[in-house]
Image 1 (cartoon, rainbow, N blue to C red):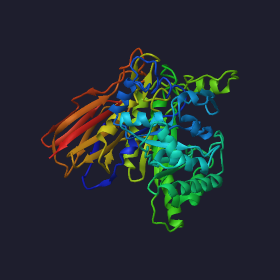
Image 2: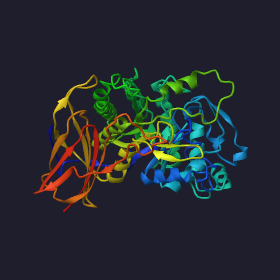
Image 3: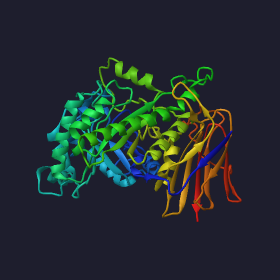
Image 4: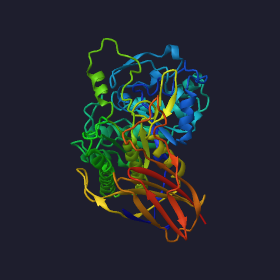
Length: 515
């Protein structure tokens, strides 16, 4: 299969906001307890934070982490999570049918963020709470001293303000499942008024309004239109969420999944349309209001989600007399196809970096995770960790608009799909050019030729590939390195010609030094 990829250094899409390589941490399952926080673990620090997990997060150069939810936040009282741990109340979390002890709370999260060198994105409760709680929490977190809430923070051992700059105004408020669900008009008005109150404290904070929970919602995109009509001038971003299921393939029976690969790896085509539709809605409201302000997209939840969803439903539908703490649910083990899908998703974010400025892989640890842990035991990387790793480390700079001439195929999800999916990032300060390439073909190698025109290559710095003969294999506690990046030599640069011979169903990372 012959493929031609064309890049030109002057065809810039946008400067990339590094926050598109963020993640998400919710009080759900074992994401917090036994995930990032496990005081009795032999490798935990003085705060009870697992150092092995912190190392894996630090390796990602994680720019931002959204917290504490998610559905969890819509019935959450933030005041429960501050002060001496022995005085914090235990609550029942309605979203995930669990017992929340609040021993890991707001200040612990901020401390953890500082240790892994990431910025917090804090979500406030606009389900059961509202404007008053919003103004109080921002005073607690960001005011230096001399007021009730700021002095209370100091009393709790944090003299310096947390200076949280990014705030989510609720979570998935379009969903009937959400505690405090509202109509688009009700939510838009509340988001606008909460934003006004928060901006009276600090006009420089960044605020994210809730967009649709997914593009299949019956209210999409009317929800975005109404919410932005009410709040356009007071918010900076509108959120997008999307999860993908490879529903035809849930076992190692290849007959059950004979069409799943073809369909599954075209989901990024639908993602592109979803982003374009939201961008069009933003532009419509901007035009309607004759506004000079730009609202961008925060894609603050995304991930494959299907391996363990039945177990979640069993838990949520069970008649429990005693709700458990940190019940292990949604602990997906991701395979090679999931890795490739996430690669195409990140490419889509890079290729839409003019409008997508924040993105958060959901979630970070144990729950539909990038990282998995064993209680009192090891931690390891899931397959989906690696595309995020390469993009976060080497996808900083400006995105290039690529032209790809590739054979195409059709699936149930999309027609005329390129077998090759790719993005490219140029870093002029470091004089580097990085490519992130996925071969969607199940059978054919891709003989890829690069036309780089005025991009003068000095040498190939790095080339790594992710593939496996068993596309359904996963990284597990017994085999944590089944799917890992490997150094390769399939990319060559000779006589000023850059070429690659990419095997079927592979992820390829290439980094070049420019003259």
